[in-house]
Image (cartoon, rainbow, N blue to C red):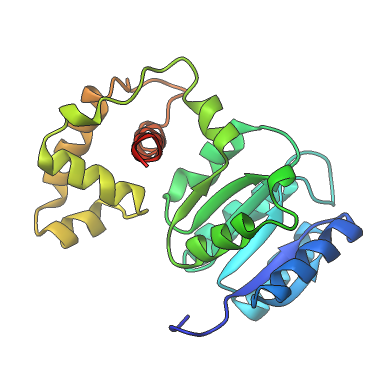
Amino acid sequence: MTAGEAIRVVIAEDHALYRELLVEHLRHQGVDVVAETADAVRLRQAVRATRPDVAIVDIRLPPGPGPTGLHAAVEIRRADPDVGVLLLSQYVEAQFFTTLVTDGLRKVGYLLKERVSGTDGFVTAVRRIAAGGCVVDPEISARLLHGRPEPALAGLTDRQAEVLGLMAEGLSNSAIAGRLGISGSTVETHARAVYQDLGIADEKDTHQRVLAVLMYWRARQDRA
């Protein structure tokens, strides 16, 4: 996508009326909806055919029960990391977000449907994901951070804060190393120090990188 070019999206939503509202709202805001579908199979086909900037995906799509849309979204990210993915859900299902970001925090998002229709914030989220960023619904963020203390970002060294900020931009360790002119192992060392200083233990059900980035965003919002 070049500067000034319209963002191209594919929408996968099985509720026809809701899908039509999304399409109308996005097009009204200058977003190019290149395909729309109601199931996970056609979603994969549409993404392969059109290579959009962002795929907007309901977590639960036919065929089959369960988070079929999530599974399709994960496949899309692995097949083509340049295609951003924005998951939509009717309920707070925080574990699905951590599944989605296993391969990285770049060009990814998760929003509750109640915040979407007719809001400028939704289009802003789509644009942010297309540009390489990450968007997380406040309720999902709160659920993931439940019971954790306020992030002590002031206690990080300048280099640790710099590494964490680049993590929050969705950069991988190798990309951070290239940006800062340091080795990948040095980035890993700084990342481990960040997790330790923020009190994020390496536990079975803990995604350290995601929690660190969420703490970073929360601290930024508190200062805004």
